[in-house]
Structures are given as C-alpha cells and as structure tokens.
Image (cartoon, one colour):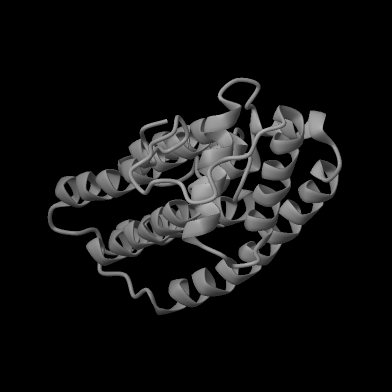
Length: 227
C-alpha cells in the first residue's frame, strides 16, 4: 500500500470516512497528465490537514463531532470530484482549460482552509507551507511540460498521440486558436499548444479561421466536470 495512504491509517475512527475519500483522490491522481506537481501538492496538504484535525480531535473534540465531520467530508468531496474531472480531461483538454483548472485548484485549497476553520485550528503555519509548496509545484509543472514540449517538437506522430485528436482535427485547431487568442502568456502551456497547432496544420494541410467567431463551439470547449 502506498505511503500516502498508510500514513493516514492511524487517524481517529471518526476520520476514517475522510481517509476513504482520500484513497479515491489518490487513485484518480495516478491518472493525471498535466499539473501533476500542483495536484500532488494539494494531496500533501490534504494529508497535513487531516493530521492536524486528528490531533485536535484527540486533544479537544468539538461539541458536535458528527456535524463537524460531515462538513469536513463535504469539503473533501469537492476535491475528490475535481481530481476525477481532471483525470478525465487528458493532456490536450488540460492545456485548453488551464485557466479554469488553476481557479479550481485555488478553490480546492480554500476547501482545505475551511476544513481547519471547522475545527478551530489556526491556519497560519499551514498557509505558509501551502504557498511555499505551490510555488515549487508551479515551477515543477512548467519544467515537466517543457520536457514534454521537447518530445513533441518536430514529431507529428507524437502530437497526434498525446493530443488524442486523430478525429476532429479541425475542431482541435479551432479550439487551440481560440485559446491562444484569449490569452498570450509565453508559458509552457501556450508553447505546447502552438506546437500542436503547427503540427495539425502540417498534417491536415488546413488552417483554422484567423478570427474565429466568438460564439463558435468546438468538441473541445468543455468546462471542468463536463468532459
């Protein structure tokens, strides 16, 4: 059994349902292709928060333990659903939805802060560790994507495999074009999308409209949870 799970097996009985949710979250995390470090950092924080709550329950349980635990589980289920949705997105859609994903990860961390608040645990130390971990994770994710970019450049076959766009290639090009028009940030995500667009143009001999209609919807225009 993985060390992430075994480290949680000794928590108080009241917290075992929370551990059950984190087991599912951990299983879904193994399927993540993009933002692996940021989501791994989220998992690490989940473990720290559960550990802090475990200590608080042993030291000074709340008057209504059941109510507090139910609130905790509701927050953790948000993270479970998010991890499942992101695992389903895959590589290409994760790049297209990068802004939405970033917002959802911030919300997930807020859920964990709320978990500490429920049990009246001071969050100052946790928040400092969260910010430091997030900064490291951002850099790690960018480096990982830069490594992936090196594999994709001048490798049309690998682009098709990673982007999984054997069909709907015109839709894929339009989705990339729309994404690039909405945001130019010179990030590894943007550079990877540009490589993908160039490769798809080469393979199809076609180009997407230079100015797509704002209302145009493609097969790749999905919100988190709709994939």
